[in-house]
Amino acid sequence: MSQSSTPQQDKGSDRLPCLYCGETYGPDDLERHTAPVHCGPCITCVDKPACFSCRLMYCVCDVHRYRG
Picture 1 (cartoon, rainbow, N blue to C red):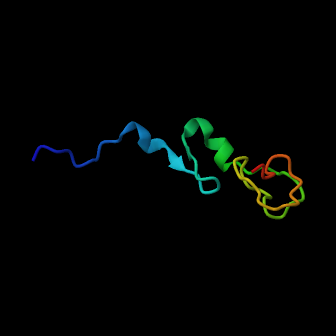
Picture 2 (cartoon, rainbow, N blue to C red):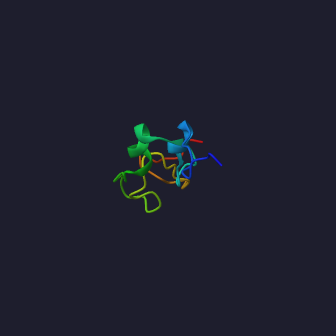
């Protein structure tokens, strides 16, 4: 067989699904999905990344407040 032992990487393989919002992201959007945001007094979203949407009705954090 003439196949290489290492699998070929396709262009989409560097995009990962986010654990918090489910979006796929690449290196250009890494900070939005991984860097914790110190947002305020809400106990649900403290230290979550900017992509996280808090589902608490009384969340006061401007970054994480659910806008659905």
